[in-house]
Length: 434
Image (tube, rainbow, N blue to C red; front, side, top):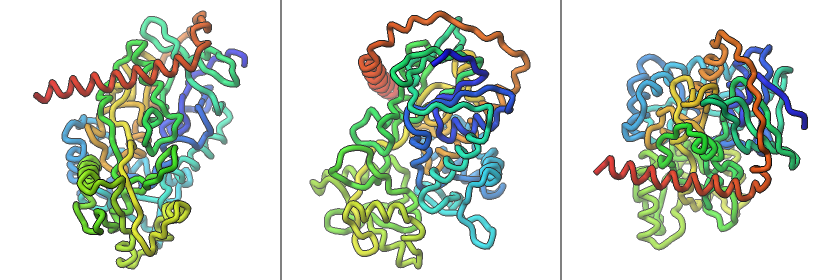
């Protein structure tokens, strides 16, 4: 691979990376890289939907729902930006071809846990897949965007607190690549956990890399456990059973098939209830009953086709019986500290989506705010890059590539550093709350 220079390098091909790329002018030379296949991002896995401000009367309740779910640890300015930008963002997605459920041309809204009212748009039970695929299709049309799959960011290249490029590995070759602006859109940290709904290659490398270069991190002990993943003895990624299932009326039962909680409390509170019930019952799961949705006259095979399909693959028939569910690591609210334009503490380095922390989610994410937050602040990244009046002279540094020869050890070091930082952040927060 020959060394190349770009205007913008985007690390990640989920909705954050794609939406950033699509809002950059076509005279900018853009490189997008991803560790795996294009579609293997957490964005692609999102099932439930995407929040939107329904009308001006919904702002106060949307704002309060987000803050209450986040234990009021949220950054209010960021929450306001997200909510006020939501309708414009949805309109753009529709223009890009995203097909949200509607009836006679009117968008349909559903409700999920901790929401005071229905304000969530969806596409069957694969909203993230629908949005990601449509955005990727648009990205592929842009002649100014080069995409590299199976390409890993090994490190960032810095000079005088400026990010000037990244070191990448593709086909066993390690290469420095330079750009005026670098956008980290690398997703979550589920790959470092045994039980997670994330893809295993999403291991939070950006956090360790940024820490090593003095870039500020924030709230990295804020890790969300989703209360309902499909219980399975098989190793690997856990299958998420969407919040929308409970939003449409599914109930949770203990081992005696009796209800033990309100199914629509915030995710962290529901996880606590489920864990306590499993401990009390001495079981590895609780039961989820989707038949209650059928009683409401909803066709669950049409509303949740992929969830039903997965349940049947695991040997369960949700139209006739309960399915076993268990909490699993799901989302990362902390990350690389960024401002309202997704700028990090290092010049020319941005972070967006799950790997960033702009304060929207606080200590616990409200259901279906993830896609919206990623999209809103991805556009702000592009807007900020576009607003730079002066073109920087491209910086190029001599890079010692020998230190990257043992990548197995390097990435294990990254993983160890992340766990260390998480534990230290927990201690700091514990001391603050004393």
